[in-house]
Amino acid sequence: MKKTVLDYALKIRLPLTLFVIAFSFVLTYYISRAERDGVGYSPDQPINYSHKLHAGKMAIDCQYCHIGVEKGRHALIPSVNICMNCHTVSRKDKSEIIKLTQYYEEGTPIPWKRIHKVPDYAFFNHSVHVNKGIECESCHGDIKEMDKVSQVRQFTMGACLECHRNAHDNLPYLEKVNKGPEHCWACHR
Image (cartoon, rainbow, N blue to C red; front, side):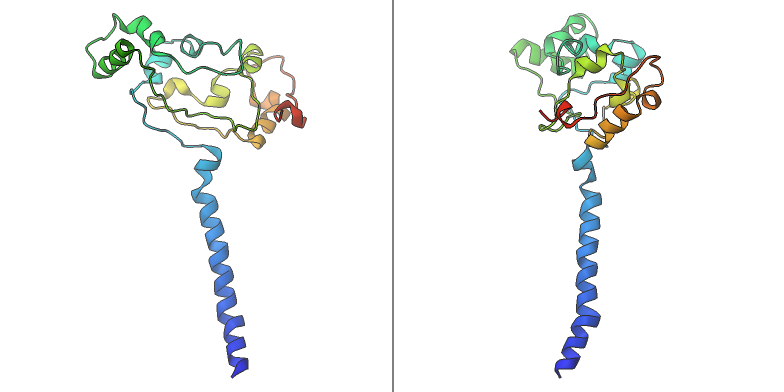
């Protein structure tokens, strides 16, 4: 009797248990990928803003809206005042501009949802990259072709190190580019 119970446990239960554990791990790994690296994250925004129209068709420079990127660590999310520089006169009758005007008149900031985010434990300085001539598209993808922005590249340690180690391959548009720092304290401060 004991031998059949042991045989059943070794032949059926153990492999089945190991399979369920392995399958659960693999499934969890792939399902949580977007949460881990952000690729594909594309939240609905409070105002449907088209980068394809503004940055693409109208060729408005990223730094016009995302101010301070050449001087500071962060690329700031645009305030309603920046939008209203044009939209006090332009396309005022459109539904999204009417929403924008409401935020402006109420003095309420637009609750934009952040898309691109470096983990809190890592230090990243936009100004260093921008002032070296690295284009926004190198990390953020072809924003000029996106009606709705989504994260297209990983913001992981591996992705950053890949670019730092192979700067010539990853930034071919720059004639003189040095490798980026690879020591831990460059990002982990």
